Length: 109
Image 1 (cartoon, rainbow, N blue to C red):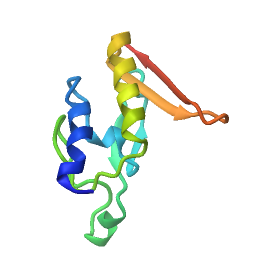
Image 2: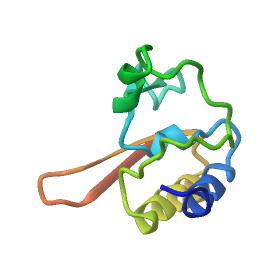
Image 3: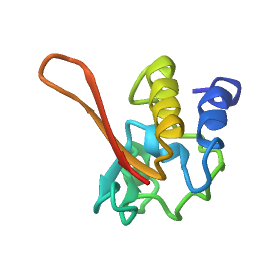
């Protein structure tokens, strides 16, 4: 995805301190408990193995861009996730699709 296309996603992550572009990337795999604020995201981009390191060579800083970003949800849904987090005052959240295909979002303050 070109830098200009990533700008809207990057803007959405800048809404809250500590959010990373990895949170919305299909190559970002979460581990730990995000709802408790103690989770982290590991990069599993296919080119990482090609270049000889496993996972991201370093953790992205909040608001930092990444050339390998590929969204895991449409931008409209990511905007909904961010909007719900802001309206609820959550600092951390998790989301997934249920069996009916609906987006389920949970979080903590």
